[in-house]
Length: 364
Ligand SMILES: Cc1cc2nc3c(=O)[nH]c(=O)nc-3n(C[C@H](O)[C@H](O)[C@H](O)COP(=O)(O)OP(=O)(O)OC[C@H]3O[C@@H](n4cnc5c(N)ncnc54)[C@H](O)[C@@H]3O)c2cc1C
Image (tube, rainbow, N blue to C red):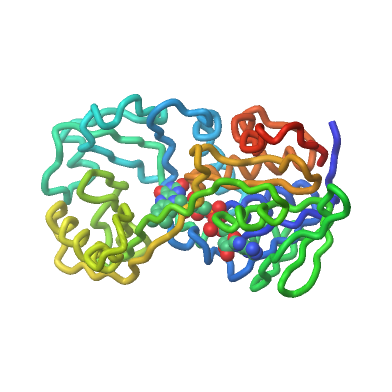
């Protein structure tokens, strides 16, 4: 087993994924520099509904990662008191069974009756006969969690450079030895790309394009009454949860770019749906309604591991990124620092996108 504690690792991207990597890498002794083009959590992390959602429909090649997501956030809460998860549980209903075949739920999920639903959510106007309640799930403030992880990384000696866009790589033969940034070069023994939807553009400069879609989704924050919703409710009319104080948070599907489907229009429609669904909504005012671009690898699987064909670059991108950031950050950093390949990351390797390019070198 190798041990690369002390090696200079530059993490690109200060969203929740880069923050988790920086925290775990620095905690294991790597010399970490976190480089961000704008400011902390200015990417999709700042527009996330941030449900630690471990359910999945269809076959799940990363079931081992999803299955560990909750316990890894519980660990982080003990390590970082500023990182707080609202462990409220999640109540889901209303999707016809033929539209949700083979959904796997976390073991804590149980079917609850109307009476139990009303105990959980007394404000529901139309409680269904039955719902699924994932008791162990929760949600967090993704911006606050990202800051907490970065503060934890800094406490372990990490340096953070914001407003520092990465423009490309410095190479020597088939090895990356650093980065060109808008503020000058940075040397690195390893570059870790956690730049979300910005990753494809960077790897293209190495002639190693990674197919990562920028998939839009709508984030809405309302001012409403405190304690309107106690759990996290997901039904065809709305996906809502309580935020801090009197904030109510919602996520909606992006439809198209027409005027009637702009985020502000969707926020008003969703507000009416919330009023139809819940008692006690006397006032509900959209404060924020915006599109977030989720980095989704085209085959749906996370991309985590060394880039083949060139030494010195590790990639880390996934959806759902909030759910998986804690477990993937820890496993990836163990691979990087201790050279311990994590079997749970096996299905995530970038090699799968380059298999028709013949043998590529695998040095790192
Ligand atoms: C409405 C909505 C609801 C969601 N709900 C959930 C949910 O309930 N649960 C869940 O798990 N996920 C959810 N997601 C998805 C989740 O938010 C993302 O998967 C996650 O935040 C991705 O984090 P990231 O760190 O990979 O990306 P980002 O937060 O985008 O971070 C990447 C960072 O890299 C920086 N960057 C990019 N290029 C460069 C460059 N060249 N140089 C320097 N810096 C660069 C960017 O500025 C950015 O800050 C939701 C997303 C949306 C939009």
